[in-house]
Image 1 (spheres, rainbow, N blue to C red):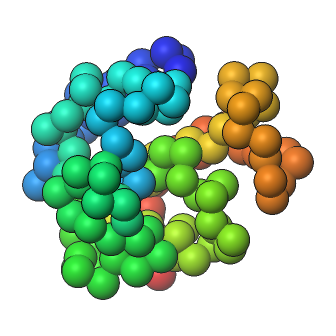
Image 2 (cartoon, rainbow, N blue to C red):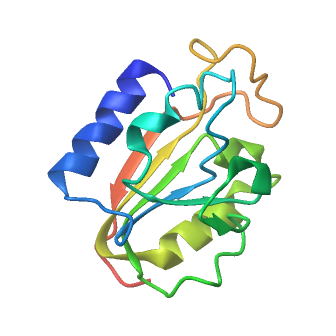
Length: 141
């Protein structure tokens, strides 16, 4: 996560009073990794419930973003999917689950890599990634 992304996320976490009880980080990634995405993960440790499909990431919940059935519909006020959707063969599967666990008036905060900041990613599936999407759920379906 580059500095501008981190500052934007921190603003939202503070503004909406996000805690591990009402906010979740999907695809949290490992704490100690040289990858720039996770190099600064320590700063938000404990501010969001951490979910990852890889147990080496030491998440609080071991799960794939495409199947979050352990969470209730509308359970979270704030859902973060940072640098994970681009790794899915079909990102809509992950987005559907994000939307399902997001409560009405909740915020979905997604980041995908932009070649200018993450040239090592390689954009295997898409040529024009969207770097940041922040949306508020205002309806029920």
